[in-house]
Length: 520
Ligand code: GLC
Image (cartoon, rainbow, N blue to C red; front, side):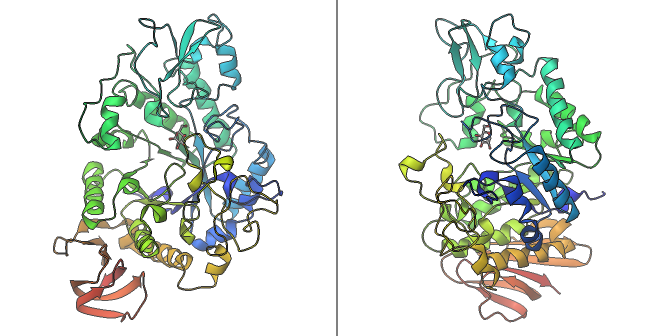
């Protein structure tokens, strides 16, 4: 099978307001991103995903779009966008953008028209219904809490919002809406976007009959994913969504080798693969590592699940952190967090599948405590969205303003400048590991196989391609562990301490140490 650029790429997610502020207003912007392409290139990044850059009243920090075809004035202009794309492409970096089709802002002109009267031509662009038994039309819940329906007194009907009430859902059963979104896709592809990360793509179409979702059975311990099977039975992941995805893909295909990665929360794990057919998404996010406790058994089960669900045809993705969840170094707890995050980096970058790095994880940026008066996000996600820590100066090298839009973390302790010169830093580890992955056929495209004969608290696996055989051994225990291994050279260790290059027969792993070996 021919390889595609997005299979070999190492992706890096940027939260644009928090990467780099070029004009001193305390808010990151597009020119700021452009100014750091050399840093990203040296890290080994091939492609960026930018969280939304569109105009927005910022109720959901850009995921409430009020104009799909422009840039938010805090971030720049279409001219800064064009410069950014040109500079990225000049260095061989691709950029994909967040497309948020499920809902708009309530300030979007489409919704302003839609809510103006029942007979407005845009009325049917959103999902309006009369109430039922004196209440909302269905029992559907907003992902952000409460009913997903908001009563509009002026026109006497409810509109649907799967998220905030300021984020009304578009009606993709209306062909005019589908066409409008295709035009949005074309607009950015024409301007040079390499593709899209598509927000909550499975939610784009709902049950035509508006049936109530079943109640979650009481007294059962369900995972977040298991709950979706009940809570979104009729409001997400409906069979018709695949026609919509295919439509998006047809538009994408008009522009050559562009790509879409979907934020897919399937109601059942096995339906993830349904979105990865040759005429649908090239990639879908896989959130399993975000919810994995720190244990070899847990990570192993998640990897094997992905391997068996997706099969050889579909290409997986892996991610440790993003803008919606606490950063992994913080999730891994107070003890050994740094060692664990180093090992997690090795895990992420040795998987069979495209890795997505979240800005700042390469320097081990933790979540930041946000004092109450500075909180911005209604869902409390600010702590993982704080400004990038470039150096130890007052604004962290992020801004020259006296105050950044969100508080900075401890820039004296953790910053890019310090780590650039330190071969034992997290940054150095990410650079080495990315380099290793790129120069190894086994790691970039080889098969995956778990080693069955490993101690229970170690995850050991093989990646093999052509004549190269790489073995990865990760010790999740807070104590050393011994492993039997074939004759091998050590390509990388997360501790680097006292390692011989050549090992044979046996290796002792330090607590929370990961090693990458080439079997010879
Ligand atoms: C996605 C985004 C999240 C946003 C939500 C609603 O889950 O990742 O940040 O709040 O969609 O658009």
